[in-house]
Image (cartoon, rainbow, N blue to C red):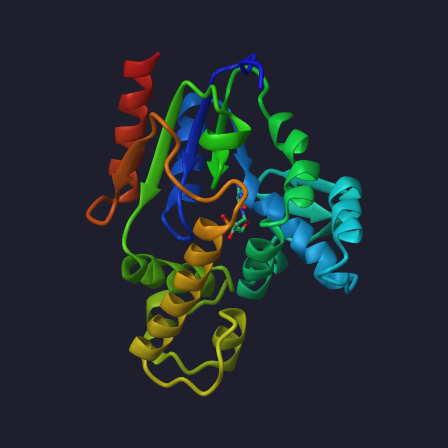
Length: 251
Ligand code: DC
């Protein structure tokens, strides 16, 4: 790919590594555009699930990727003129996105859409292959990760929080017995303890890690020259400050 016409900072990493939050805050701090590439793969998977596309029909999967009417309005994701922000966050959609994104024709059909986000004054791109494939000439490449156990705890809290409930996410996870919560996590009912909930989320995360890392095309791995940050013991604020400091050094 030719050099990006604008400065690009990539943040790659596995599911629930905190890269979405960090990417958004870094983009805000720099006044840059933000690309949530996972949302694009999720939107594609959501559209395929909704129209019952045969998972073996590569042509149909590719066509759906090509015509996907996708719009980002602030934090919202709109598909075919309807707000699908919540729906695409379901664990089932994430798993489907992980499986469909292993298909080369689907990735190829979604590539230019992602590169089009690189506009002045600059871009923060969040995903799995931002530094390796989509923006190989990025000025700074970050790979954000931590253990599957830590990520499972975060992911469970994140999904519950997205339900917009008045109870605190922590309380709900501790109860671990609401059908709504379990449904949104894609978990089997009944699960009674917080540990059981976390364990099952962790199993899903390990499955998604395995899928994302082992695929033949654009597997999840740190890009050459990427700075790897294990954020197990960092608050999001500390990670953001670290990334911004690295950016200033690079620029
Ligand atoms: O970041 P996420 O969980 O929203 O991404 C959902 C899936 O989409 C992820 O498991 C793999 C795929 N994906 C990808 O293949 N390449 C990207 N750049 C981003 C996401």
